[in-house]
Length: 217
Length: 217
DNA sequence: CAATTCACATACGGCACGTATGCGAATAAT
DNA sequence: ATTATTCGCATACGTGCCGTATGTGAATTG
Image 1 (tube, rainbow over the protein chains, first blue to last red):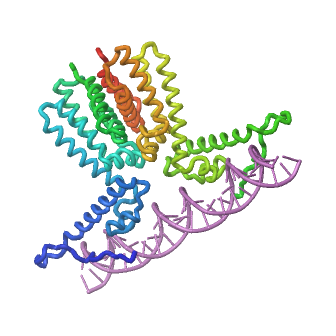
Image 2: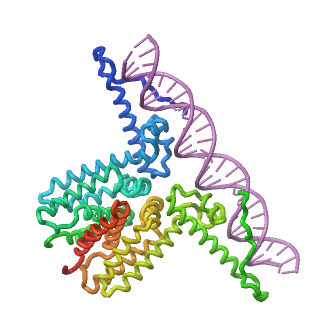
Image 3: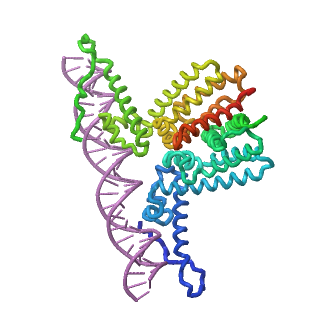
C-alpha cells in the first residue's frame, strides 16, 4: 500500500518529435492498462481459479487497483469474459494453423480434434475455458466470442460434407458434439494417474466414433 | 434472528410405546438434519448457482444454521459434493431403468443417451452437475460418486461389445467421450432460442456419430 | 487559456465465510 | 439412578472480498 506507481508521467512519445502534440500516448496507455489487467487476471485465474483469485491482489500485481478494473471491464465477470475471448482467439488460430497444413481435409479435421484435446490438457485452458468459464459465464454457446473454435470446426466439417467425404449431417451440431467429446476426453486425461495410457485409449475411442461420419470407412 | 425453532423437543417416538427407551430418534434426527441441509442446498444451488447461494440463507430456510452445516459436511464444498452424489445416483437409476426396458441392447444404449440429454436439460441438473460441479469440485472423473452414470454407460457398452454389436473399443473411454458429447449437446439445446429444432439436429448428429461404433451399420 | 472529459485511485459499507466457543439433550458409566 | 461424557447444533467474532460513491490530476476540446 505504501507502494505507488513509479512513473506514470512518462509518455513514450517518439523522442525528438516535432511540436506535434501528444495524440497517441493516451490511447496507447489505455490499451496497455487493459492488456496488463487481462494478463494479470489470466494468470491469477489459471493458477488460483476464478473464485479464489482476489481482485485486489492481481490488480496490485499489475501495478493498478480495482478502480481500473471496474472502469474498463465493469466487474470481475467482465474481465473473465475478456480473458476467455483472448484465449478463445488463440485456440482458434492454432487450430486453423494445424488443419491447414494437412494433406487432405479429413486428416486435417482429425488433426484438429486431437490438437484440441492436447490444448485442453494445458492447465490454463482447462481451468479457465473448461471449468470456470462455463460456470461463471454460462454455456460457451452464448459467449460473444461465440466460441471461435467451434466455428472453425464447423467450417472444416462443411468442407468435408461438400467434397463428399462425410455424410450430410448438420455441420454445426456435429461440431458442437465433437467438441464436447474432445473436451470430456481432455478432462479425463488430465485428471488421470497415467495420462499417456489414458490418452491412447481416449483417442482410439474418439477415432472409432468419428468414423461414423464417413461415407465409407 | 428473533425466530427460534418452534419445537425441537418433540421426538416422534411411536406414541404409546413401551418403556423401551429412545434408541432410534438420535440417529434418525441426524439423518433428517443432513437430508434437510442437502435438500435446501440443492434447491439453492439450482436456483441461484453455487457461488451466489448464501449458506446463512438456505440453512435458515431449513430451520438450521451454518453450525449444522459445518458439523456434518465440513464446508460448502462438502455439501455440494453430497448434493452431487445424490443427484448422480438419481440419474444413474433413471438411466438403468430406461436402458433395461428396451428390446435390444443397442436400442437401450441409444435410448439411454437420449434420456441423458433430456435430463441434462433440467435446469437443476445443468446448473449443479454440468456447470458448478466441475468448476468447484474438479473433473467429474475424480468425484467419489465416480459418476455412477458413467459406469452405467460403460456397462451398457461392454455388453454391446460382448454380443458383437459394436466394435471392440475401450468401453470406459467410449463411455466418457459419448457422455461428453451428450453433455455438450444438452448445453447447446438448453441455451438455444428454439430448443425443439436444435434438439432434432443434435440428436441426428449424435446418432450419426455413434453409428461409428457399430460393427456394421 | 479555460472548461471539460476521463482514466484511475481512494474510501466506505456490507455480506459471506471460517473458526472458536457455548449449551443442552442423549448416551454411557458407575 | 445419578453422574459423567459425548456430540449435535447454535451463537459470536474476526476477516477478506466485493460493489459503489467519490476524489484528483492529466489529457483533450473549444
